[in-house]
Every structure is written in C-alpha cells, then in structure tokens.
Image (cartoon, rainbow, N blue to C red; front, side, top):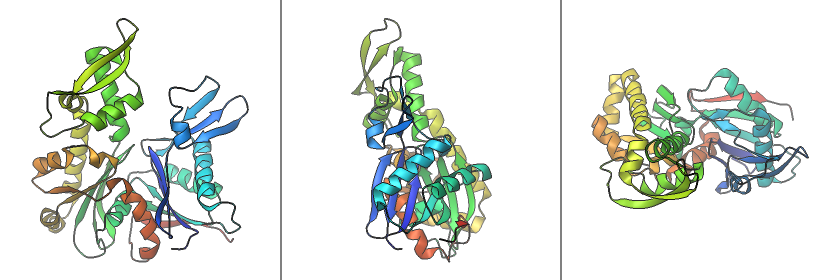
Length: 338
C-alpha cells in the first residue's frame, strides 16, 4: 500500500483515514459546520464537533451520516474532500481509496459513498464491508476454512458477520449502536426524571456509568441539563443501573441480530465459533460488561479486540494487501483513466 493508497472508515461518529506509512493518520468526528450567510464551510471534524449545541443560528452544524449511511450527500462529499486534503495535501496524483460500508447497505447508499470518494479526487474506489475490515484489523485470519464471528458496534449501526475462506457467509446489520444508545439515555432521563440533557452529556453518562452486566445501583455519576418542570438548570446523580435500564432495548436488539446470524450460519462454522469465540470491535465494544452479557446469552466466549476503535481503520489499511484473496464483502466499484 503506497502513501497515496488511503483506507477510509467513514463512520457515523468518526472518520478515520489510514495510509501505508503508519496506520491511522487522521481521526476526526464526522461533523461539518456550514455558514448559511456566506455559503462556506467554517469548520469540520473536532472543531465543528465543539460547536454542537453552541453555534449561532446562521451556522448549521451537520452530521452528514445517519445510521451508518450518508444522509447529506453534499456535506459528506465536502467533509471527505477536506479530510483527504488534510492528509495528502495538494498532490497531482489522485489516491486509490478503500472505503468501509455497513453490511446491510443498499445499492443507492453504496452509490452515494462512491460518489463522495470520487468527488474528493479518488482515481479508484473500493468498498469493503465493515465486518470484513473489522476482522482484518483485529488480526484475525479470515482466509482459512474456519468460521470467525465479529460484532462491530459503531456509531450508527451494529454489524454482525461470520466469515470463512476470505468471504462473508452470513451477516446482519441493525441500526442500534452508539448514537441510538445516546438517544435512549436522553429519552430515559426526560421521561423518568423530567430532565432534558444534550447529546454530549448523554455520551459522557454512557462512558462514565455504562455497564450492562450486573450494573450497580450506587450513584457514581452526575448529569446536568434543564428541568422540564421548572425550566431551570438541574443536576442529578445517576448510577450504572440508570444507564443499563435506558439502553436495555438497544442491547436486546443487538443480541437478537446476533441470534439471526447464528441461525443462518452452517453448523460446521457454528462449531468453529464455539471453539474460537466471538470478536467484538467498534466503540460500542468499550461499553462495560457487554462482552460478558453476550457470553451469557449465547454460551460462547466473547472477547473485545485490542484497540477496538481502530480495528476497521486498520482493516481498510490491510485490504489492499489481500484484495486478490477476498471473495465477497470487498469490491472494486470505480476506475478512472487518470
């Protein structure tokens, strides 16, 4: 993989770009800020993320991806272009790009991803499904005739897949992941404690008090927001049990999606998974107790990969080296004559 071969993990929460010179070289929130008065982008990435909930009316702070797919094509294209320029500068040779997509993405959604990469100057675009990239990045050997299962929990989707001989045998994707957890936490405190909290506060509460395996009722965190009763600022002590109750339906949906994949997997490969276990990747893998919860549900050992946040990005980095061996879940979709 040369310096102009880029792997892009275009996630709902973060965009990560990797190159052949040293892995991930850019990791920014998937956020862009647009000035409606001047029709210009004023910030992107971390700088734009800090503006969420704090920007004046004429500045739109936009998340161009929702549930793992592009919801605002123009802003997604501009964000990808700006991120690529930040990595490679103003080079004359356009890069080849591998981009990740969820396993359940539609043809229209795939086209939007490809167009975004082409508009950013890519001369060749490859798509790799997130579970394949996640397993590659986790250091798993997916080329041999053995079943490996991955549960990749990102910002917009949770992707579950079983691979063997370099291809996907069974897969499922559910729109229950980090962003859905945050929304459920916001809704829980609004309905049960009459406190309105922001998305960033919900994210902090999830990180601080998230535990889905034997959660404690001891108050270990604090949230702040606006009281729906008085309209005034309010604070509340919270426990792991609060967060566990808030996201319980989302966790159940992920467990149900894993069960569907097991039901669609040939018995020989299920036996391999029983012996080798389930690998969990993505930011959601960091939710305390989730690996043990999955182990309890299925009787199969579930382990969190090393650096689960970076697994998909590493997998895109590695995809060029093994692209001739990957059978499905990876495809060349665009070639120009540059």
